[in-house]
Length: 253
Image 1 (tube, rainbow, N blue to C red):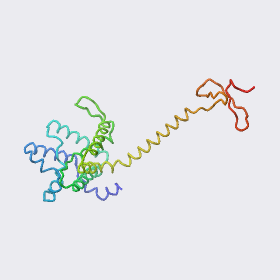
Image 2: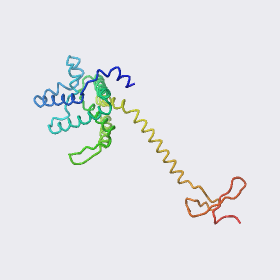
Image 3: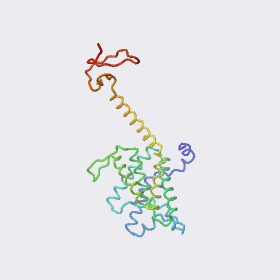
Image 4: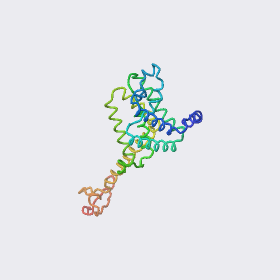
C-alpha cells in the first residue's frame, strides 16, 4: 500500500523536511526571545483558527521545546540526527508521511476540544520513539558523560506517555493519541508480531524446561528416577501390559 501511495504522491514530498523543521524552530526561537507574546500566536487553538488565524495550523509545528539557548541547540542537534537517520532508513516519502500523519492527526484531535491549546510536543516525541525503535543500540551521552542506549530512553519515554495519558484530561489524551497515530501505523504490526513471537518462544522454552525435568525412567517399586539418581541403572521386564521399569536394586529374581 505504501509503495502505491509513493508512486502516486511521491512527487509532492517536501524535500529537506528536517532542515525546514530546524530552520522554522530556530527562527521562532529567536522571535520568542525578542517578543514573548509570539508564543501565544503559535499554539494551535482551533477556536482562533475558526476566527481567521489559520497560520496556527502550520506554525505550531515550529514551537521550540525550550528557550534555553544551550538546550535548544542540543534539541536541534538531536532533531537533525533523528530526522536524517529516519529519512535515510525510510526514504523521503515515508519520512514525510510519518510527520504529516502525526501533524494532521494532532490538528484533527485539537478540533474535538477547540478551546484547548495544542503544541508539537507529543508529535516530536513520536519522532524520538521512531528513532529509538529503529536504532535501539544508538548511544546518547547524558550530561555529555554517561552513555545510555536510546532504547532505554525510548522505554522511559513510552512509560511517560502512558502515565501522561492516564493523568490527562480529554484534550491531553486526544493530543497524545493523535501524535502517536503515526507510530502505531508504522510500527504497530511489527510490534504485534514481536509480541506474538515472544510469547511463542516463551512457550517453547517452558516446554523444553518441562521436558528436560521429566524423568525418562522411573522405578515401579521405589519411584527413583534417572533424574533423581543419574548413576542408577534401569531395566524393563515384561508385565501384564506395558513393560515394567525396575532399578537395579529392585530387579525381581
